[in-house]
Structures are given as structure tokens and as C-alpha cells.
Image 1 (cartoon, rainbow over the protein chains, first blue to last red):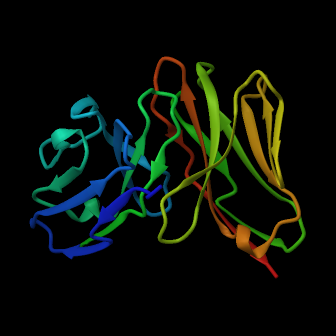
Image 2: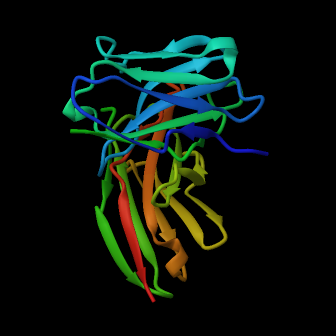
Length: 114
Length: 112
């Protein structure tokens, strides 16, 4: 079974530029998560999708971050405009339906904002 | 109340020794306590998890000890190996709130 795929793996942009990350979850996984992991901290949930609907986006900075999951499979996370404090690893995870299902993480995208 | 406090921040253990990482929580509604292992350049992977109705769970060289009254839980890695060198995160989740609350992580280095 293929794991969670993410691209790009690394991205360097200047502040005020925009950036987009892509995630392809494990086949059949209905739930998809985006996390932000700042160096030296645990992952912080940004948004959770169940199929193509948003379950929780309470910690997503909606003035600059947006995410979508068209057709309930792949997802993109966008930042526009980026700030220095957005430098982090952005992790995508997926799980089978159900709030207690184990989450499987992708390798993440390391974003550096200069 | 939603925090999970993890210590130490970093840990160096000799090969063959026991690695111990501790976590503490405040929210008594938490009922699921997983540990994740993360290697550089990889996402976290579930290592072992426990529910508060048991005081200990063992899987191979990895053991979770759980103290409900003290609201603490710990990961013990027996016979630590260089391949165990990674960052370890504890987490907690409540029955009514599905979100995982993560500790800050412990960077473990096993010296050969």
C-alpha cells in the first residue's frame, strides 16, 4: 500500500509571495489532515477534511491560508501572502473514516520564508 | 488544560541502555495516549498507544507506563539501539474532541 505523498519536499520563497502544497492520501482514506510543524515543536492541526467537507479549520489562519480537497481525494494547502513565521514543515496525514482511526503521515514539505 | 508537557527535550543514551521519556497532562477527559516516532525528513509514525484503563503496555522493546492519578505517562525503550535515534512525540486525545494534542518532542540519540 502506497503511503501519503506530498510535494514539493522543499520550498524557499520570499515573504509576501504565495506557495501551494499538494497531498495525495492513502487510497480509501476518507479523512485528511494538514499540520504545521515548527522546528522544536509538535505538529499543530491546521485543517481536517472528511471526504471533501471541512470538519475542523479552527486553527487555520484564514486571512492567508486556504485549503481544498476536490473530489474527496487530493488536497492542496495554499499560503498567500507568506510571512516569515510561516517557515515550518507542513505535514499531510490521512486516516480511514472515524475520529479514532490511526493517522498516517506523509514526509512533509519544508517551507522556508526569507 | 489542553497542553501535554514532554521532557526531556533531548536525551543521549548508550547503546543497550534504557531510554525514558516522560509526559504529563491536565485534562482528565483525555482517554487515548499515543507515542509517535519521527526520523529526519519523515513524517511521524505511530509507535505505541495506551488507554487509561491499563497501567502498562509493552510492544517489543517499547513500553508505555501510565499513571492515571498522577496524570503522567512515559515511554521506555529497552536495550536502546542506534536505529532508535529519532524524535519522539507523546500525544493525547479526548473522547469528545478527536484532535491530537502533541508534546514538544524529545530528540533521542543512542551512542554506539
